[in-house]
Each structure stands twice: as structure tokens, then as C-alpha cells.
Image (cartoon, rainbow, N blue to C red; front, side):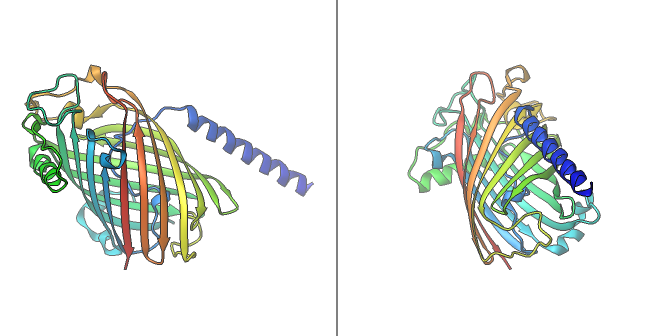
Length: 334
């Protein structure tokens, strides 16, 4: 009798997980898609202290428009629990906690960045620079992770998007951008985001599937999303019993499809407070449902972390194009 009960319970749990997995494939989600995020378990680093550098650019996919570049430098350290802005984060009990701060810079251009005139019907020039304070809480007993992040900064000329892109194009001997005088005007960025990632399956410690949910609100973007993540290869179980790395060499691939419903995007629509932008995309022209797919290959040995990734996104506004970009990450624990 006990054995039959156990078999029945196992069947119910697996059936429930299957339908949850199926639901995630068909339910739409919201996301400010280009923002770099290292809090998901597929990018987890087991060290209590580490630094990581991200660089994203559509050069990796032989394009040079829309989301043209992202730079992200993060620092994880236990004493950052005492950083003043950390008090605004979520601190779940009975979870392993990691805290970090990051500096992020994102830049966007229309299809032809060499034109001086406004390109009506295309994406506006825009740049944002952000200080991100974030925390990650992994509950090993319940196999889930909750992350929270507060981003503060500015969008507009103060983010120095023109100067950074001009310098990079000078170094790489590419045409100089000429339309940054039409960029989105200066405005305040203040955004809060919550992410939840729950293990669905873990087959033989070589394949992992998770459900992902995220919500955010603020002056940069308003969003809520649902997606899935699939991980395959040699990796530490992100929901294992310890934050300490057990495998000397890790190499694995991940796939993360997501479906987006966009409520507000300041890089397209301009800031929330300053309405003096020369040109923006209207709310009526915004694509409310956007599909994005991210995949990557991760290699790690000891305290070294290396990742190459690519992303695809469907059009974000009426008349826009699909877009792809790539990125590299380098991390080191200490």
C-alpha cells in the first residue's frame, strides 16, 4: 500500500510538472529585453566573492543597428549586504544569499547611424548608464531562486553614448555615427525588478529545466515575464546543497526562450518625466508582444568563468526589424 501511494504521488508530481512546462511554452511574458542580467542560475558562479565583465555587441552577428552595444561590470561580495541600497532588496529567510553591485551601459541606434537627419519610423538613438544593486537568494530545499535588483541612473546624452560609440568606431576603423544629436533626452532612471526561477526537472545531473518569471516597474521599463531555461552538459547543480563548486571543470550549454509583452520602454519612448526628446516611438507603434531567445556556452575551471552567448529578438515596434547580437563574459572568483 505504501509503495502504491508513493508511485501515485510521483506520477501526480511529474504530471503537474509536465503541464506547468507546457503552460510556460504558450503563456506570453513581458521584458525589457536587452538589459543584461546575470542573476539566473545558468549564469551562477559559486564563489562568495567574484567580479565579472560582460560585453555585448551586434558586431558578433554582423549587424550594426538597434541594440548596438552593452557593457556590464559586476562585483559580488558578502559585505555588500551592508550597502545602503541593499536594504531595498528582498532577503528571503532560509536561503543562501549573494549580494552585488554593477555598472551597466547600453546604447541603441537606428538602422543607419551615419545619417544626420531624424529617421522617422525607425528606432531613435538612445543610451543609458545604470548603477545596479542586486541580490540573489537560492533556496536549496525548495529548488528555487529569487533575485531582486534596483537600477538607478540616467538615460540620454549624460550617458555618453555618442562618445563611446564614436571612440569604438574610431578604434575599429568603422564609419562614425552622425545622428546622436537626435537621441532621447536626459531623464532619470529608477527601476525595480524581481525574478523567480524554479527547478522543473533535473535528469541525471546532466540536464536541468527551470521555469522563469520576472516583474519590473520604473522609469526605464515596466514588465512582467515568463520563460523557460534548459541547461545541458557538465555543471554544478545550481539548486544543490551548497554554494561551493564541486566539479573542477564545467562545460555546458543553455537555451532560454521567452515571450514578452512590453508595457513601456524608455529607450524607444523617451523618459517618463522629460518630454523634450526630439524624436521617439509612440506608444501606439510599440510591439506589445515580442519573442526573444538567448543561448550560450559556458566553460569554467577553478575560479575562472567564460561564456559566449547570442540573442535573437523579434521586432520591437511597427516597421522595425528582427535583430540579433552576441556577447562574451569573463569572471573570476577571489
